[in-house]
Every structure is written in structure tokens, then in C-alpha cells.
Length: 124
Image (cartoon, rainbow, N blue to C red; front, side, top):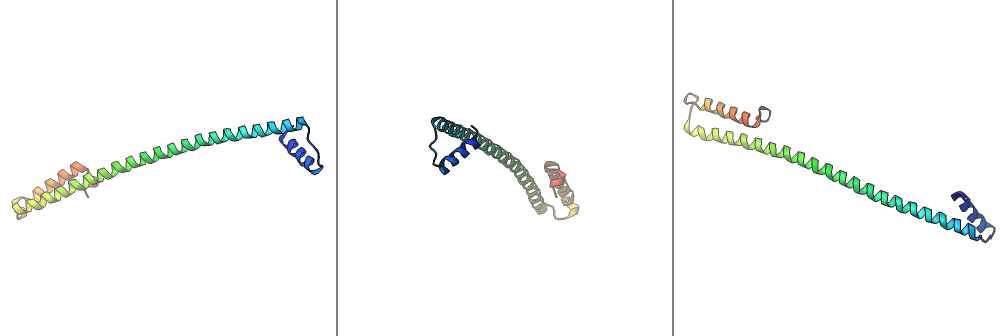
């Protein structure tokens, strides 16, 4: 019997106060066992898919964190080099008081070294 036939037979049995025979009961029990086995299989499959999805999400999150971390570290290094250059120029100002004494040329040299160290795009 198919699932629909079994359901219809149970509905008719209830409606007409019919007592089901042994074959009918056996087929009903087999249908229930099959449905339970299918439910268990689907639950296991769902657990596997859920675990795989969680793992994939976590891997993507970790990869994004690592990329962001690298970008932040590069920006921090660039800023530190720029600050060092500015601090060095400020200290040199104590020694050179005019452009004629070499402050302008030394400042330009420091700016050039900073650009070389961090790249021209980040030196701004």
C-alpha cells in the first residue's frame, strides 16, 4: 500500500468503525518505520550541512580578520614612519634656523626617505 492508501484506510476505519487486519497494521508500522528512518537521515544530513556551513563561515571570518589585520598593521607602520620623519624634522629645526643653513634640503631628504619607506601613496 502507498502512504496515501494507508492514510485513507485509517480514515475509513475510524469513520466506519472498522477494525484493521494484521496486514494493514503491519504495512502501517512499516510506513512509520520508513518515515522515522527518513527523519533520522535528514537530521544527520542537516547536522552535517550545518557544521559545514559553520566551518565555512568561520574560515571566511578568519580570512577577513587576517586581511584586515594586515591592512591595519601596514597603516600603523606608515603612520609611525611619517611621525618619525616629522619629529626628526622638528628636532633638526633646533640646529638649522633658516633655509639657507640647510633645513629645507634636510627636510626634503627626510620626506623622500619617508616616501621610499612607506610608499608614495601612503606618505600624504
